[in-house]
Image 1 (spheres, rainbow, N blue to C red):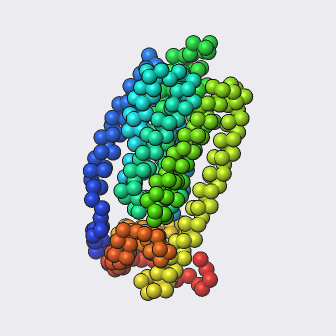
Image 2: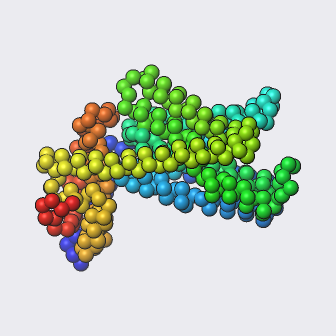
Image 3: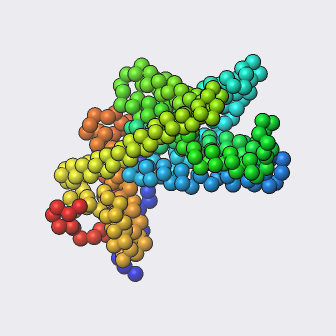
Length: 385
């Protein structure tokens, strides 16, 4: 047994931990269970076990790829899993529970089906999805720090909503439509091709406007500017959604094709922007950790093992020679270094963060307590990153 393995890592105690973590986790689990029951209910409207199975499977197929995309974008400065789970569950359960009754009420108040599809649904659904992003204002300095965070949170909400909505669409397609001479697995598969393969990121694209607005709003000191940006983001989200829904109502197949091309171009631009913002995060991480090392808070030789993912992985592989305790110590140290780096950058650039300096020192203290267990590779030659 090595010296490192003979010791026990100190418990992860955050002296500035936000209240309500346990409550959030419990509520997410409850909502997720309700959502699972809701998905089964919507699938059962297909009228058969086969139809319900197809609806559920088709709704699940795009999720791994879509969720991986958001995991990759969030990898540099990852948010706690509980918040990301809450975002997805909100979209799948709470947003559906808000939007569906509103749309039913619109229909009963006399809005015809075309107007409901083209405008009523976008208004209700973007409000329901965007509400989660707005509610993060109470914790915005810890959840959404910029445009990329806004895109990730709004995208996860939208993915949850789309997954639940798709269950209903596939079940309805299995039953068939009056104006279409197809039904069963054939019709459900055709609907899956349109929604699950050709447009899995449609809802995330719509709601991204609200996420971008939130990311910009966190850097505004004026309350009027913050709420003005959020209102503008909501209007743009509704507009994008209305363009998608209304195109086929107004222009038929040609209109839908044109709208698809326009929105696909916007989605491509959004994806490129997200990748650029992620690369910028890596630059911020390196710059902030270099400045932290210059201040003597960490050793300069540690910086390469805390920034690039390849170097981080090499550090963990090296620590594995000293046992699992050393590996866990390196993982924690890397995670804490990432958090303190972005917090330090925010403080130094004048971005308001609740208890910014105090939290910085608290994180550095937790890193210091890990030092007896830390086993990093030898220092790299000068100039090697």
